[in-house]
Image (cartoon, protein in one colour):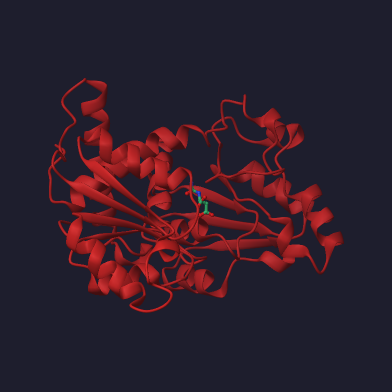
Length: 315
Ligand code: NCD
């Protein structure tokens, strides 16, 4: 996987995914056994963020530093480079890739990670490109599912929330489609239904899925049957023309004590964060609420991935 760009979920087959998850396991074992972790000493990561980010930026920063490497943060490059007046994005990538060993890119435009990868002389990791994909967050989700459920094949997962605009949902669905026996349910407000591209990918890969729209009763059935609940935020801004629909969504798409009661004991609640009303604080104490545990899994996963793309073995 040395020098592979990490751009979108479709680029990986199951074998490559398992290689990434194993690298995360190797890092975790090293950390737990207090073995040296400075595998990337002397390497430099350019954290190129065109858009504000706390979790992804910090997580890559910590991952690289824990591996003994260094990080150069490049925040909002358009504001202090000539990118907007001339030169453009491509020149920024040429400059940055001449100076660092790999780039993590977050950008507001779909397809920007691919554009960067086409000209970069070092590996590019997509840290979120507009509404399109966020493959490393979805790899973390995949790793978390594997650890919690003892494997990924055969898992039944329900995606709940703003499914139309969630890049983490898209990336994760594309990853899951590589596994066998997966069952998927989608539950969302009508205006935020899962995109046709994602549904088409599931059909092509023979993954059965169901969809429920604006329906509290169906949501109960979905919640009680799934192994994993994957929630995303439903931003009020999506409903400016129809505030009454937002009020209705707030009533339906939230985990509360009633839904906790009907969930199976070994169903886990995941969320990429940031969260809003869909996950009230009262859920946090439930042992099935694992959204903050994801962050620790995420460290191991991103550390393993950094090693892989730089061609350094974590075994
Ligand atoms: C994502 C984010 O904040 O960009 N969360 C995360 O990286 N942990 C959520 C998203 O992509 O929508």
